[in-house]
Amino acid sequence: MSTIGKKSMDMTQGPLWNKILIFALPLAASSILQQLFNSVDTAVVGRFASSQALAAVGSNSSFISLLINLFIGISLGSNVVIAHYIGQKAEQNIQAAIHTAIVVALLSGFFVMVLGQFIARPVLLLMGTPEDVIDLAVLYLRIYLIGMPFMMLYDFGSSILRSTGDSRRPLYSLIVAGVVNTVLNLILVIVFHLGVSGVAIATVISNIVSSGIILYVLLHEQEPIRLEWKKLAINVKEFKKILTIGIPAGLQGMMFSIANVCIQSAINSFGSEAVAGSAAALNYEFFSYFMVNAFAQATVTFTSQNYGAGEQDRCKKIFRISMLFAMVSCGFLSSIFVLNRGFFLRLYSTDSRVLVYANQRLLIATTLELLTAVYEVSAGAMRGLGHSLLPAIITFLGSCVLRLIWIATMCHRVHEFWVLMIIYPISWVITGIAMMIAYTITKKKSFR
Image (cartoon, rainbow, N blue to C red; front, side, top):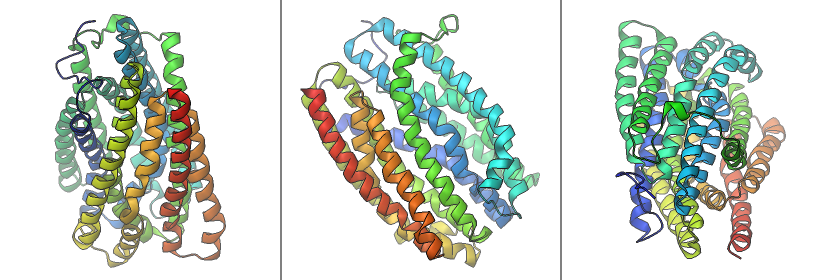
């Protein structure tokens, strides 16, 4: 088989801990940079526009996640399938899976872009977005969705590169796009006074930049990873394999988002100050979670390659190493944000009423964010072994259903912001225990 590429990594041989770190840290940085696109949006409008503009941008986060998580999950399916083939050294299958993934990315991106234009206002109204921010929220969302085809192309293209062990070039593309996004935000909001439309336009342009760089890399990559326009087509066999892994993974992400949409609706009931405060704190929650998510994705890719190569002992080591790294790195980053919360939260708002809600969310959710490692890494290991449905079911019950019950019961009885927030760590503990049990059973069956 021809060499995958100079930037690739042999995950089936040699020490694991250093390779997992080399793979996961750029991945975490990439996720943080993607979130910085939204963070810069909220920071700029919060400081240079108004609290209503900040709330308008923040109120969209849950719904945007709901729209894109299904397709990000499908991109994870392409990662698993391609990594399996790399472990098996099946070059023709790699080519078929890559070109199928890119076609799916483009089609899904245009689908979300068009659908979102029609359902933006009805969904935001259904979520109970405050009247004083609804028009701004709809405007931001509709412009943001224009960039969905480019966002999908970046996610699927990056997934292809990561299946070979290359997590650095996706990071480099986001660094460039992040600089573009920040500069455009400042110009469009401060100089041209475009408010939420300005930050949305900047985000769309930055997505075009990041996807363009990834597309260029794939078009000039070595065989069998190279993308060729004439080969773009959906291979039914590979498409089914990608969906088998990807759809349950995407549904798991959507379930989180559905629960978060419901929580966002509950947050909206406290008014625009609560919406703005929650949006500010949520950014740091995301940053901490991305450390967990990076090692969970490393678990998926490393396990996929090694399971494809028949290296069962290495699969077990991958799980243990990734779990340790995920919990330590997330706990360290969370503690920095919590201990210095006064400084970090004032980057987004100086409104005392907004900061009350922001502090509550940061202290309750961000402090315990490391608990998410238990279920994320376990789920990643199961997907790497080719089992994606069970983690989705556990997530649905442990996070989505449980959170909805909490909102309908406890939050209905005690209408306090902190009561709403504590469902996060409660659901993390319950889901984590269930996911660990499921992984132990799945591992025994897969290695038998």
